[in-house]
Length: 269
Ligand code: C2E
Ligand code: CA
Ligand code: CA
Ligand code: CA
Image (cartoon, rainbow, N blue to C red):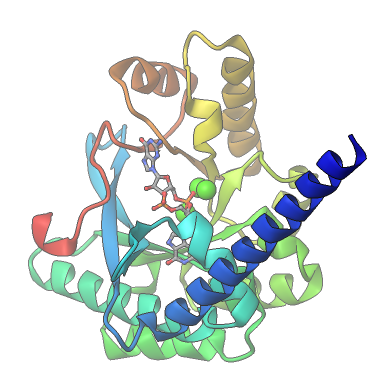
């Protein structure tokens, strides 16, 4: 029995070793993804219930690995944050999102808003505020049509710096959304201290509405929190008409999800 468990132990070590090596390999591939033109943006619509129309678009990063195909951002973004490649990659995302918004504004959708995800590392970057101001000017973007999304988890990394940076971004007129709301902790204290315009209800809470009672209670509570703090509330992961009806009935202002459209390349929009 002893030698069997020993074999098993060695097997685990070998497995972990391979995993580490594969991860390292992927991290090296990611480092070259930008110059190899393997990155692209997909755009997903955000629907306003009161206006009854599409009002915004979220830019979502895609990585097409030459051998492995599409790799989920939930997998490679943390890698890029760890290696700090998220700085050049994040700059590339911002540049392309601003450029695309400029094109849509020129095409007659003057009020269209673009939402871009900002990682914790980018938020701590001392150059980020100037860089955003530079891009607004370069692409002639009215600041209120640009929205940056940050998560609670990324704010927590350095609360003081985040507060200063987000306040500066807000001061140039860009709007701010708190992403994945409800999945972090002590959210309410942050809402008061930070200049957010919007909270995004995480899709895990939208799932199973209206049958899932717990999620109903959570969603209703988040909408009330939004009202109390004077924040817009957007629900993520809306996939069905039933979910939409529930959200509208509870007073949620905006929705995003496959029900309105999957993330698509700009030309397919
Ligand atoms: P997120 O910001 O919460 O984005 C929403 C995710 O939900 C996206 O996954 C989107 O494709 C997916 N989604 C949208 N509608 C539905 C729906 O109706 N049902 C379901 N099941 N899923 C839906 P995606 O594109 O895989 O991105 C995952 C995460 O990666 C994002 O979560 C965000 O945290 C991060 N991410 C993506 N692009 C960027 C980026 O440019 N920069 C940074 N820092 N993070 C990014
Ligand atoms: Ca987001
Ligand atoms: Ca989210
Ligand atoms: Ca998420």
